[in-house]
Picture 1 (cartoon, helix red, strand yellow):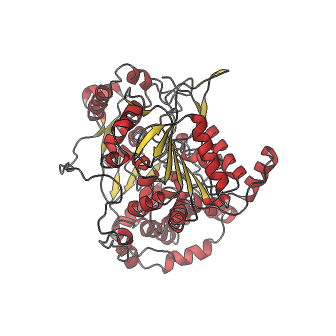
Picture 2 (spheres, one colour; picture 1 turned 135 degrees about the horizontal axis):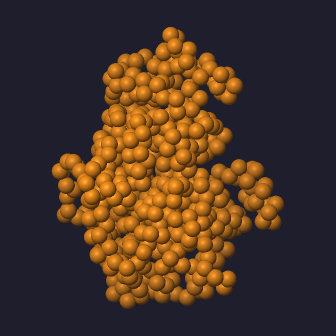
Length: 568
């Protein structure tokens, strides 16, 4: 039996890796304090509209901003929001937008520029004292920059010289595995494919990415359980499910457009169960901005029918308890289990039944932080539903036992045949807008032999076969001196990787760090002995090529691939 000892997980109040202070390059601690007021308003609604207006004014995007709002997430000639990976509405919704998405877009479309004058006026040591907000608020990067160790300033460099510097450093390495190529989920599919092809033609599978730090557990678990690393539900399934279990995610912050699906589900009478240590805004009620009548009347819609406040990390025990309850119910009600589905499409049911039966309720209560009555409420919702969908985010996957928890989600769904049919299935909520597309197009430090065989056949290269390093392996390699060149295609590695202090120390030990970015961030001021900043276009911008405007493709959380065409 795989369970989680919550007592063992009580954090020790010690700085990582022996640091005397928790600060490791993450910038100064500001004097601002978070509000202690409880949030009583419905999610989205007029509060979001007011916040968006403030952002449009602050970023001076009163013309381009509203134009972008009507282009975001539109399949025909529109661009994919650079925010979350929630899928586009299938019914042609004109305003398939959210507060977070508009903020992402206006932040990218700002007229502010971080040009050579900025870097001439401020040393890297000085920039390192700025807050993360202040760094990015300088605006869009305009030209390639190289770090001058003698002056402690970034200085302009030509593209040709920048490429030659990268090439000479890579050629000087004794082994291709001394280089690592990191990827953010903001990348489009075409750039992703070329990036992994470059790394593998160079000779390494060191392709860490942001999913190593978020949904890697989901991919591993789903692959082991179902043979695919992706969820099986799409937006149409969300629209027809009888019960929705939302685990470890506050949609109002992480996937705000989910609020539309939750409001619609509540109106049609579906059961909506939120599992989270906190009852957050998305688990209460919402006013969906594109529902104009509700906006005008200040009419909110509930987004939950049951909230279960598990102990942090207690999701695994809750799921096991629900499965135990369903199996116990099957003793008196044969319809509690879908035996035909289990017999035809699953393996190991009897072993799993014995495991559930042997798990004591007292232990499930202790580890979940819920009472037996609470667990039975959730199990009753599941048993009464003909079509159940379970969705989750980082609150489930970012635990030591994240893989086991996601596998338990699949186990629970299999008990009643909630797989491969309408309105049912596992549905992970990815964070970055194209993190799933990155993995589909080859960003994987553990590539399958089949993928490498096909890559060799189509592209005429001999790709390396040994597994590469993930994010943690790369940081450890930096400390050992076995990773000497680090290239980041987007993202903010210094702040995204676990253990900020240790990561910053590793980056500073590299011979060369290369950051391909749209804006200045913490990773530009925590760098190797040599460092480059290379600017690039953003998702919202037109990419003019010889044959005309260039579109890119992206893949959303529910495996839909579509074109994205910038408009600025």
